Every structure is written in structure tokens, then in C-alpha cells.
Image (tube, rainbow, N blue to C red; front, side, top):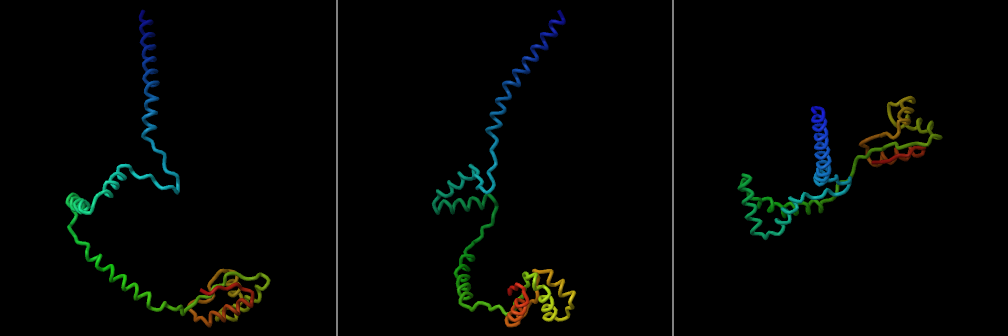
Length: 181
């Protein structure tokens, strides 16, 4: 008799557990699915928060007097100081006049240039190395070879336009592609 009671208890416990998990699992899955929101795909605009969206819509519907009252209430609620922003608005037209004067002034003319060796023709590498050795003071043949092979590199900086043009012409004749910046 005791074995029958023990077996009956185990069967009833097993049935209760099955009912509990089988009925709770679908309900949990449904309630969990309602709460989960898939993330927005990359590059797409993030959907607005519904609460904030409704606040924005309500504020947009207010007239000017109501906006003023809202502003004072927010300042009181958030303990913000009562400051006047009028001086900033007064500076706006003066700033615009200053910008007009700057536009009327002539643009700055570039006086210093940089000559840059971008690349070179492999067939004329030897001639280019010799030309670089002759054009750049204090450079021996080995240094000139390393300099040419390290292209793209700056040949000279902060030089006048005429000198930059002469340097570009000489290096171009030797088989180099040169840029002036």
C-alpha cells in the first residue's frame, strides 16, 4: 500500500510539473516576445521614443504664450537661473556685418610652396638620382638614391613659386612626377 501511495505521489508531482511548464512556457514566450524589440539596422534612422515623440508633438502644438509659460515652469522646476539671451541676438547682425567685411577683403595669396616627389619612371631612375643629388645641397649619391626610392616624399618646403616651378621642371625632365602644394 505504501508503494502505491509513493508511486501515486510521484505521478501526480510529475503531472503537475508538466502542466506548470507546458502552460507557463508559451505564456512566457509570448510576453517576452512582446517586450523584445529588434535593433534598428545599421545606417537606418533609430525609431523615436514614443513618450518623447508625444511630448514633442504636444510642445509643437503650443502657441507663443504657452511656450513662454512652459519655459518659466521648466526653469522653476529644474532650478535654472533666469537669464536674458537678448545680448546674443543683438550680436547676430553685428557678426554678419563683420563677415561681410571679411568677404570684401582680398583673399590671402599663397607665397610659400611645397614640392613633392610623387613617383618616378623606373627607366629613368639613375638620371633622377643624379638630378636630385645636384639640386639638393649636401646630399651624396647614396642619400639621393634612398631619397628617390622613398617616394612619395617632400623635396623642398616653404619655397617661392618661381623656385618651385624650376624644381618641378628639372625633376620632370629627369622622369619624376612632381606636385606643387
